[in-house]
Image 1 (tube, rainbow, N blue to C red):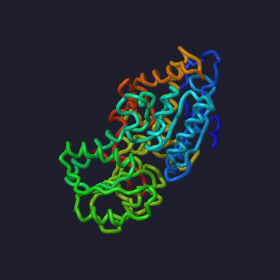
Image 2: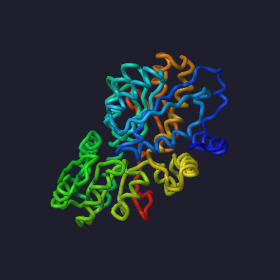
Image 3: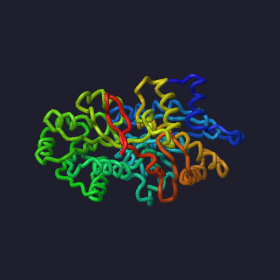
Image 4: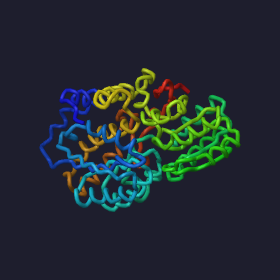
Length: 390
């Protein structure tokens, strides 16, 4: 959906402050951005809102014309790899944005590394960028890591008297990452995981797993899922009579989760990033101004209450590209391997860049670049996502 010229200008100026006199460089070849998203399939609720935010991007990057080439992987890692190979070898893109599910992003590492094409992923798991060796040196990530989110979540649990937790997560790399990171921080804060269960994104029942979790009598439950498939275990827990607090991960922050979950997800606690709770953030949060500007622009186009964390992550890609492309253009021309390498280096040297979901400082060892300013606790209250203090 296209924005009016006025709103496009307001978004670009207020949210990101991207236009400057330094961008009046001589015309060069178009910057080609290849975008792979899960716009259909189980992860569509994530991919669609990401794409919505990308349709709001300006038509230039660092003052140069930009082409945005969108492909849908259907939430299938194999299709994602085929899309990325097409974008690299047929469309000759300068950078890949996406995928937005962990299995697809991991599968994409080899093709982007072999072609020396930087990739900015939209996933939660840090596994695509950690450690910074081998093909991972070509990957970057917008969303805060599972590790940082597990840190803020377990700190909140500890501050609110949680001593034991039951865990149920996706039976894939997302669930694996969350179990690993949560276990690390739970141990640090003397929280015991008393039961562990897994389920598939496409499952229609988790009754057996939930009964085992309830039998373990934990103080709280953690559902490590993303999007609407994360509703299933919570609904079963509530309907089976679990009365303790239920925590979810940052992967739930979409209006579709609240709509599908209804009263069963009221009171959910979860770690998130600034965009999701922008209107209730403390006034001194460094990303509040950028987050609010983006939320206002997004909801003016897609409707009140429509913004998601994933839309916020996607919005943040543009200022990161704009910042890095401006520096890469000083050494090479778009459409060349030299430019892709220069862009990778520039993305690795981002400093104090404010985006809607945090403040970015990258390095050779850190291709996420977000600190605890990008991690806050949220809750579902009155059918809305709101900020809650530690």
